[in-house]
Structures are given as structure tokens and as C-alpha cells.
Length: 233
Image (tube, rainbow, N blue to C red):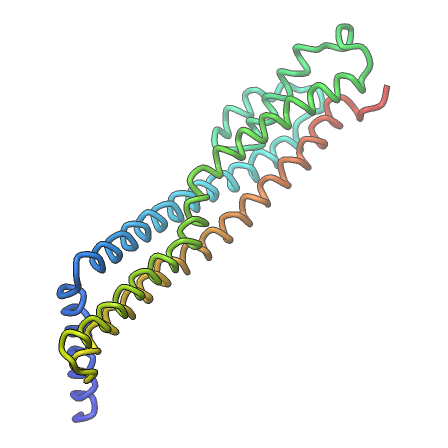
């Protein structure tokens, strides 16, 4: 029991001292901490928003793909696409269907020409949809790259303040040096705390987005093979 009390007292005093250092830091250090805090909040909001969006798209894609493979080759898929509004594959399929309808066999010539026209239209639609899904994800990479340097700037400022205190007091005792060094370390920790989740979230979201893109490319060829029967003449 006495050991537990000592640990609790030590932890409480540590938290209080860190908070007191944050409150007692200068305007520049506070500005650095506030900036890092805001960047971290925005990053977590982006991660939460994009993760939920990608989850809906992946679920809708699985449902649409299963329904598409059960559909007869020449059947109209408009209603099925409308039943999966969150599906990336459904939107690309609708673009491909419109391209085929706008270029019937008697107007487009060979099957290879129709295949190429529809494929280009579906590729453009896939790129547009991917850009929409990727929106704001780049901020995570920016935060992961910049946050450590912002924290380092606060660190340098804290060390500089410590040396200025040494010059002003004419003493290098711990009481003179400790506040500036502690302020510097807090900025370092804040920079890493903002950067690490941003980098992890960026890599995770980018991997999921790459899987969606690959699935869309594979579906494009499957759709055209089913609707046209390949790119041959």
C-alpha cells in the first residue's frame, strides 16, 4: 500500500508539473503547442472520416460485384447501380454502360473500337472517383513530415531560452536550466505525438485506397469482357 501511494503521488506531481510547464511557457512555445494540437485534431478527423467512407465503399463494392456477376450478360444494370449508391464499381459501370450505349456496334465499327472507347471512359471515371476518395488524405502526409520539425523548432527555442537564463542569472544550476530544457522536450513530444498517428493513418488509408483502385481496374476489364466479349474485332 505505501508503494502504491508513492507511485500515485509521483504520477500526480509529474502531471501537475508538466501542465504547469505548458501554462508557464512563453508565447512562442505555446503557439507551437497549439499549432501541433490543431494539426493533430484535424488529422484524427480526417482518419475517422476517410476510414468510415472507405468502409462504406468497400462494403458497397462487395455487394455490387456479387450482384453484377449474377446478372445476365446483356441485362440492364441501371437499377442495380442505383441500389448501390456508395459503390465505386457501380459508378464506373454506369459510365461504361453509357459509353457503350452512345457508341452502338453499327456506329462505332468493330468491337475493339467500342472496347477502347468504353475503357477510356471508365478509366477517366475511376480516376475522378479515386481523386474524390483521396481528398484531404494528403494533409496526413504533410503533418507527418512537418510536425517533427515544428516540434524541433520549439525544442531549439526552449534550449535557447535555457542558455539565455544561464546568461542572465550567471549560473548553470539545475533550477536555472531545467525549465527551458523541459519546455523544449515538451515541444519535441508534441511534434512526435502529432506526426506518428498521421503517418500511420496515411499509410493505412493509402493501402486501402490502392486496393480500391486495383479492384476498379480489374472490374473494368471484367465488365467489358462481359458486355462486349473482349477487344477482338
